[in-house]
Structure formats: structure tokens, C-alpha cells
Amino acid sequence: MTMEIKSATFVTSLAQYTEEPPVTLPQLAVVGKSNVGKSSLINALCNRNKLCKTSSTPGKTRLINVFLINDDFHLVDLPGFGFAKVNKAEKKRWGEMMEDYFQQSTLLKHVLQLVDIRHEPTEDDIVMNRYLRQSGIPFTVVATKVDKISRGARSKQLAPICRTLLAQPWEVFPFSSATGAGREELLTKIETAMSPPLSANADCDTMVAHPPVVCEVGSIKE
Image (cartoon, rainbow, N blue to C red; front, side, top):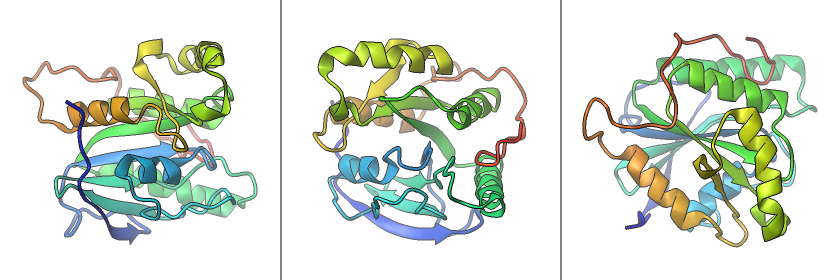
């Protein structure tokens, strides 16, 4: 049965992550490069047009924004990376903010990594994907803006995403904030990801294969 989001409210914005009230619930983080459609995806998932501010100018999310979903968990909107018009100091600050979050959060359960289905993953996308894998953080790749291409072109566009991000086609979730395509499937995935594991061997989308690595996404430092 598809998860139903009955309530979604803004909680707080953080320039530096701290795990203290009101940030006390399990977390689902959303990450992706600027202009990939993070804000639009969050609004579409929650059926709230103005929950998360959208802009035609990339790079508007400059803080860690926290939302309360169904009084059950927090959705964490992380700053977009890879925005060329931001100066190096600001990129470095965003990278450090995100790295601090991933290293310090004990409540993070799952990450949605967003990529644009129309384009091959960027170097920033690859670094983020590698960081999540090597840190053992469960994540799901979401291919946004699927309404911008024909249905017949989806497989062709997904192929380089799967190849570059080391994912199987069925592990990537095509999504359209404009039409709602893929919404039910992604909500079902989120429900599974945020549910308590049935056992110590419960499945997840990534492998815990390496210790955490240093990665300042945005300034790209590995």
C-alpha cells in the first residue's frame, strides 16, 4: 500500500547541523545539484505547492531545511551543489555544511539522490554517489524531470545514469514533479526505507564496504 502524506510542515533552517530539539526524529535527506528540482520534488511528494520555495535561479537552497512529515519523520533538504555562479568560498561552505551533516547525523535513515534524467551525471553527482556508497549510507537514485522527455526515450536516458552511478535500471526511480509520474512508486520506496528494519540483515540500496571518506561536494574534494 502506498504511503500517504497527510501532513507536512516546515520545522527549521540550520546553517550548521545540530542534533537537538526540534530535530529529534528519523531523517530522510534529499540531495542533488542545483536546478535538479529538489524543491519541486518535495512539494509534489507532500502535495503542497508552497511547502518548499522554488526558484528559477539555481542555488537558492543555502541552508539545511527540515520538514516534519506525518509527525513521524523529518525530511531534510540539503543545499544544492555544482552551481557555477557561486564563488569558491560559498561552495566550500556548502560542502562543509553537507559533510558535517552526513558525519554527525545519527538519525539519518535514507537519502534520495536526485539527478536530471535529460543529462549524464556530472562529476559532482559521481562524487556524491561515491561518498554515499563508501560511507555506507542507504540511498535511492531519483531521475527527475521525466516529463521533459518522451516515454520511449526513458530507457535510453537512464542507461548512462545507471552505468555511471553503478545502479540497476529497476533501482532508479523516474519522477516528474509536473505530472506526478512516479510519485506513488517513490512514496512506497520511502515508506519501506523509513520503516524499522525487520532484522539485522534487512536489505538496503547501498553496501557498507568502506569507512567514511572526506568529500566536500561543491568544491569537489575527495
